[in-house]
Length: 183
Image (tube, rainbow, N blue to C red; front, side, top):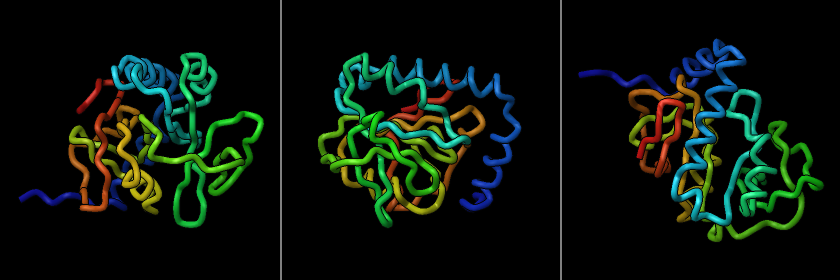
């Protein structure tokens, strides 16, 4: 019987793997992932997209805001409020540094049920759609409140053979990596 590593050791393993990625590899893998996301039929059909403002160790989203807006997408970002995430419309003029150093839009909360597509960062994913987050449960609580299509995105080194999943963990509909799209 094989023993699955615990989530804490998986996080440490992936964190080390990401640190070893040269900048040029990171940039190429980001381009491949975003091209693949944009090629998904669910992306083409979605008008209201929840993106994320990337942290330094995540796939960069900085180049996407203007590009996706020009494609007719209404963009939203998650905002940390207490122990939960709320959703607010992206407005480049209202961005302020919030919890964990993440830039967040100010203003009124949007209705998460109106979001059609959620692009989800993670520490790691597996091909079955399981996601390993940072351990606070923010995204799992948010994703449990929406019927939007969930697209996990990650670098090649973040796709693991198997991730431990529990009933409260929200599974992705798609996982997009440089090596392909998993459903």
